[in-house]
Image (cartoon, rainbow, N blue to C red; front, side, top):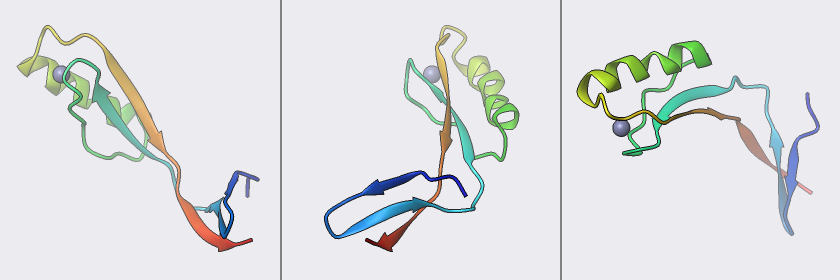
Length: 72
Ligand SMILES: [Zn+2]
């Protein structure tokens, strides 16, 4: 397990073994695509979004990491 942790006064947050979750986000209107297991799958949403908004040209791939509260 990676050593990723955030330490606070009363507890810490430690990286869990759970998978990353990926999403695409339009940087023009901030709309989010659905959660996906891979970046490739998440970014397919850009195709659909551009059908409705062909002038939106800036996107972001978001990946989220699961954490669990643990005592210090
Ligand atoms: Zn947009």
